[in-house]
Length: 344
Image (cartoon, rainbow, N blue to C red; front, side):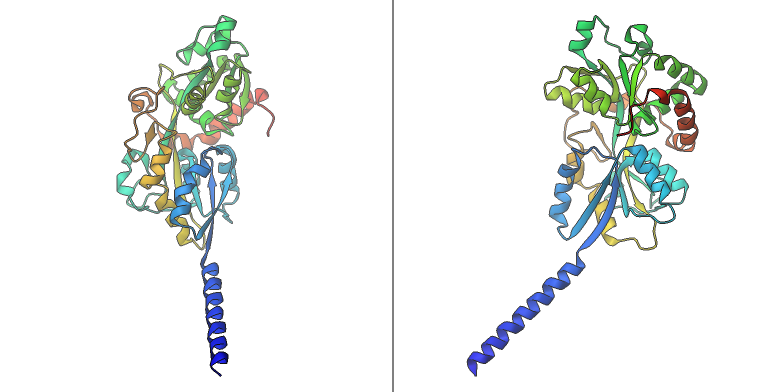
């Protein structure tokens, strides 16, 4: 009888353990996060989230800024994403104008400067870092071809660079859009279109990625790439013959930003993700790649950036850029899309 009782107790304990395991499993939450962050950054960034929230599974949907923006807008009436992480603030403003974002103040929001987040106590978007236009130049190729190194946007119009420049397509790349938007905001619309007409003569190809022009310059396929600054700097750190020039007129810039997607059921795990996304742990990782993070860290400005990178940034009206985005992209596509690379 005693032996039988021991067997019953053991089976009961196994049953309780199995039930507990099943309960834990049913409690595991899944969220879908849309992002335009670079592929090679995402796994490193997510390490600290996975350590803190092992029971939350994050399904990442990653593509270029233009593709993610279009996907969000196409899903307006039936949103698939729970949160957006690291998409251009100008794109999030477009989604917000369509009523697609829910206001949310992540834990630690008071540490984020007013210029880097939406208005109000519960902003509809929160920035994590700023990225800016840089000109990536292959110094070896330039020397072999007897070319001068450009120092400004104006220099890029020199006929010596005919067909030798690559630049991101603004319809698919956030870097491309922030560059075009900056030209229009600093020059005025009419002068900016005249400028881009002349620049087009020197463009060999428009890419669909903001980092691709720097990569192509590093490989020597084109000697000059209008890209985003950090990519050229990291390639130089790896030994590529790349010099990153920040144009004398100032750099266009945007924020990689986060938001909670408005839907019938908003998951608590999505809010936990957004809390983590502006945490000290996350900011420390962002600062490995960006000179400006929206919550300051103790990491010094990466070598190759201006000493005070904020002084390089143009005055940027995010609302103007968002409101005029469709007009800018429609006209740009009609005028220049013939030199765009095939869609990958």
